[in-house]
Length: 174
Length: 63
Ligand code: FES
Image 1 (spheres, rainbow over the protein chains, first blue to last red):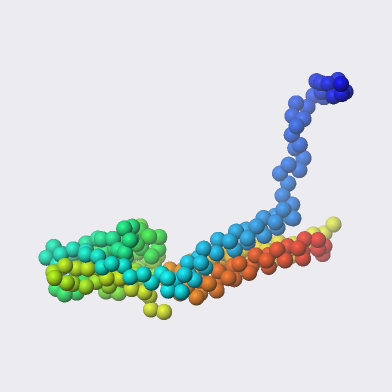
Image 2: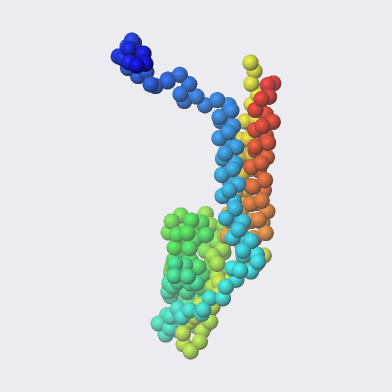
């Protein structure tokens, strides 16, 4: 038998003997600097996917042609009205606005600030984001007021046999 | 014993650059300037070995 048992109960009045209070939460300069280096590592690693996707786009793999998608019939869209649709994917909100007899504009309407859905206000002839009151020019999609800085991506449309089709998403001019 | 905070200052500066580059990279991505994305992503990655280097160089320094 070891002499361990002879010492139980402990000969002390410290009931928290297994907690080493001193230095338990010590954050010294060395530890702090290690944290900073770790944070730099996190930044480096999280840059990788962005670089990968950008490289993919640069090599032209992202230039997919999407099938033309019918949005609506011309007869169902009076002048000055707007209709929402999805393009190119099922989760990419977009909006089509009929400005005049033969003039249509379409944009991906996720606000370029924080992606709230931008909607068309006929009375003010403006596209407005409800979240922080961003406004966009309906002719070009460029931001005119509020937090957004980047224009809405424009969608090219075409009219064929009395129906309106979404053709592709335009790229920003470099 | 006197301490040197030079390392802490350098690392804080590196982290600040990390934040700026990341922000810029993300925005350039949405602007579809993919070359800039690669440049700033690369800079972000280069900053990490730099941070390790700065740590090693300054950790035992006494000023
Ligand atoms: S999300 Fe549209 S203005 Fe902020």
